[in-house]
Image (cartoon, rainbow, N blue to C red; front, side, top):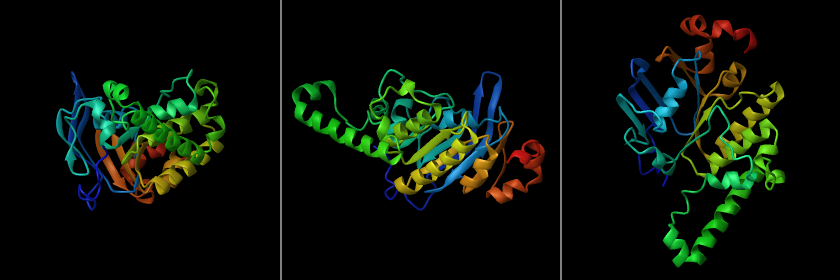
Length: 268
């Protein structure tokens, strides 16, 4: 079950990362990283390749073990929660590489995002088939509503693998929303999209935040999108925090320009 924001103290940050270290053998991937994301924010993580951004996402979703420090969702420590339970707490994620099932329909792919919502068991399905069917029907209706919202209802019954890349990206967002998340982690969501598709995708992310009341953290290298879309930006460099602030503050920060923006600001 997703964390209840009010019960957990809705005035505090949704996500709090405090002095997190992550090591892989002799590699120190994250070094005392801290991050705080408030309810309803769209927070962007930027930095050169290898800065530790995806490692942080992996730590939040328990794919990478935290060596030191703490990670809290609405005040609850999650750094020891099993990875399989993270989605139940209200954390949904997309990945750099599409994780779709090409032979399944779009609707079936999206319904996979809600697999934990049924709360049933194999024995329960046998003993109470009527309840199981009602739950599945409710999930399907909810997923169809999400597809309609994301302009995907027209391809609901098509094989996911046959669709254009940009459409598959939207489908991944739909699948994440089907899990009813408190916070949504997007790892390079605009990667591989054309210029016009990037603009449309930015509008989609804003619409998702506003309609679902979900907090969003995204990793993105498309600086134009980050600067337009995000309320706040965190800059990473060599596994550490480099800077934090509004897009305007980050854009003007000399340390950020030297480490990252200076090489790309002509394209921002």
